[in-house]
Image (cartoon, rainbow, N blue to C red; front, top):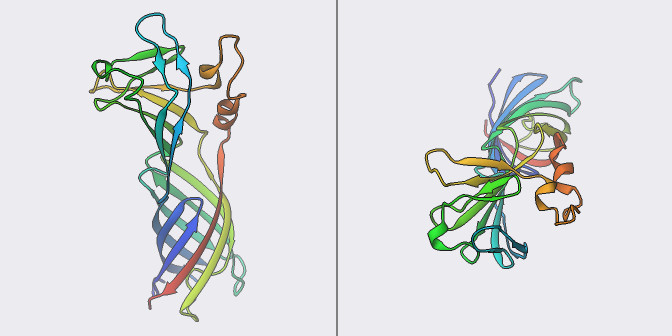
Length: 235
């Protein structure tokens, strides 16, 4: 028990990460680590114009946005269960822990909102939002902060007979559904959130501009996982 230690590098849907692994028995290994998604998405979007009954219209035709996946990274604890001795097939059970932000989008709204209206709540249909004090707005795709995980894999992260081991796994994490939300910073001590739905972006005739995509994605309860790992036995 715990008489060996391995260290690994992984790449998968959770990003790139590092993991430590120890044996708990001949049929069980414990992995723990942390991963981040190091790439970000930058684009200028044309979101059209929002016409309001009072005040000036909001022109979102030239909005620079930056998107990050798994903001803040993910911690993880996994149990690798080997049901058949000397066969590297494994059943994996564990959990990921993070900020709850699967995708975090930051939008530069300087061209749409006048500086005197920063942190002033703007209501559009059933959504209330505002910029922060610097003129940026935020939209997040949120999931649970603790994500149970179940999968299968092949390969031993820690092989006592070899210095280097390889592993591949396929599984799914339970998210509880994906919630798209925006923020209203009008009251800095109590930031309000609003949930976005497909109807939020319907045109005047009621036609859904996103063809119902937001609602469909929101109802998906799991995310698939594919991950590769290279592990080194330290002792």
